[in-house]
Figure (tube, rainbow, N blue to C red):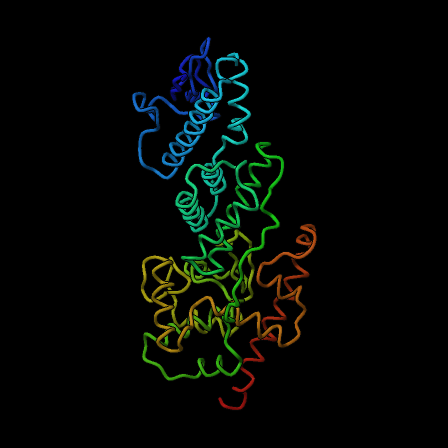
Length: 385
């Protein structure tokens, strides 16, 4: 039987100084069959015929090569047993191998590679989620190519994840895979994204917002200093349209009665009018020249968020900093503020991007909506002072 080897074809380097990884065998003449995979000299273990290292990507590449090699050896052995091999020319055997293994460039592109590509340029948190998805794919089907993924594969992948994770987490993991496949479509590696229509699992998520009564109760609580600070920062978030703690941490100044910033999570530009209720809290916890607000003396935004959330949970079970954003939106909806205005306040774009040109008009509506929400929440204070 023809002996197949995996080798690095060093006859010609590509522009990135990598070389093709090929299968080579002799049947009447030497046959070279591209795997569609490439490696630099420093990445390749020549004696073993595999990639060096134990990273997720390298493991996936090696698993893919072993899988293809096993299929090729099985095919040739079956052809030999059936007496086909001796009647087949070298060109015929090469075409048979390519057809049986599906070793066109499309099927050689690994899903983990496209997940790697999909995370480039994303925010750190998003990159971590893509890396987590890479590990899940590696655990489930290490060497799967983008052309191997279909609806049936995605359903098996979903069911495997559901054994360990919540439905919402699994739905997100499926979304990252779909995102990677869309990139493969854009590159022309596959013709369509076969998993767009696959149903994702869903669980009912408990609403992360305070009722008007609970928000007033929180506002009026007598608390020790550390908990009072956490409560006040939460109210400040609320008064500033539910600003995230990470963005609040980075604020430096108030300009013409407004704060302006780009949201860390999405890059959306915000301009928020600082109402008197918010200004009073800002002045109480002024951070000096480097910070607009001093958040528990924490040196990093993530630490500040964690500290504040722990303190809030001591005040009300399950309460966290991100409830401020949901609470503002919920109360705005109770006041029948138009959904378009709420969406603009939260940075969610509706309709054509051209509408963003009319920022002054929309911003005035948002300012008026925020004032209505604050007046509604603090209406019970009238006459008390």
